Image (cartoon, rainbow, N blue to C red; front, side, top):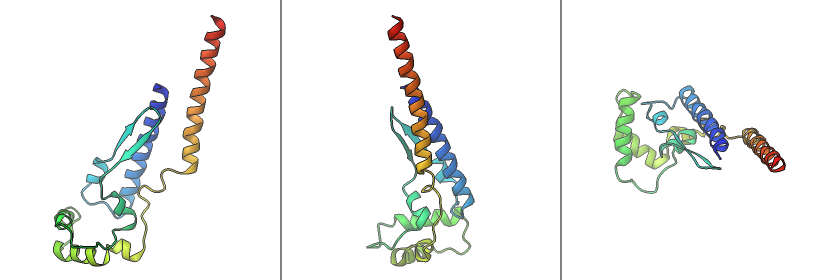
Length: 149
């Protein structure tokens, strides 16, 4: 169904644009890598929006961890300090604080609408209506062809 893919592609571009706009209007932007890593995968009747693994922490923050990790967080924080920039930022101290207490966003209970408000019941209804219209037209066309033969 080419029509389905076209409709899903339209929504994929719309959703990614909304995520990028939300990301830019929040205080989350550092390097811009997040927006470059957003992509969509479209099958006949399915749309997936994929992003970096840390995207989930951008809305509600990262909770404390159960152990000190594998050092990956320290390396990511070092890059974040360079990208943001954070004057006098100590990646080890920041990582330790996150491991013990979570990020400031998590600790304060704040929420950023980066992606969670994109797919609403209204948007789903719009998509269904567009697909139903296309299916209706295809069925109508097939019936006309069948009766004309």
